[in-house]
Image (cartoon, rainbow, N blue to C red):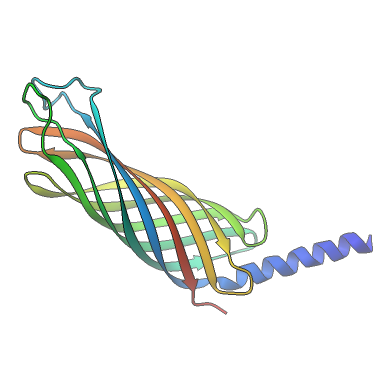
Length: 199
């Protein structure tokens, strides 16, 4: 019984130490993004079939700031972010060849909320939901605002206010350009570090 009590007290102590990092935070991320375009026959009178696709990958970086709470064994945070993506993939036009200008996804900014549950001291998986404004360019430059959703995991480095975060999110939007349109899907994987200004 004493051994069980000792284990329970140790877990409570570890949990309280992990929760000590609540407060405002800043973070930086390394990004790997994949842009995927799918032909939209509602705007393509000839050319590719509706399931025609093109892909593009690239690396980028991001920064974020927000506020984090750790009530009991829960994790919740809200943040605003900016990401430089530098991703591109081939678009589609009404030509018989079916190809159009590259859809260059330059950057995006937005806000999101994260909610998770601590499964081990300092280790927390979480879900993400938010909205982001994406800047893309083809033969014209444009912006679209669309929701994003994803998953991630957070590791709080013991006895510090630093955390390591790995996450992946997806955002879908319609990319419009001269003589064409495509359904774009943007997937972003990130590995980052955050610092919490807490006790």
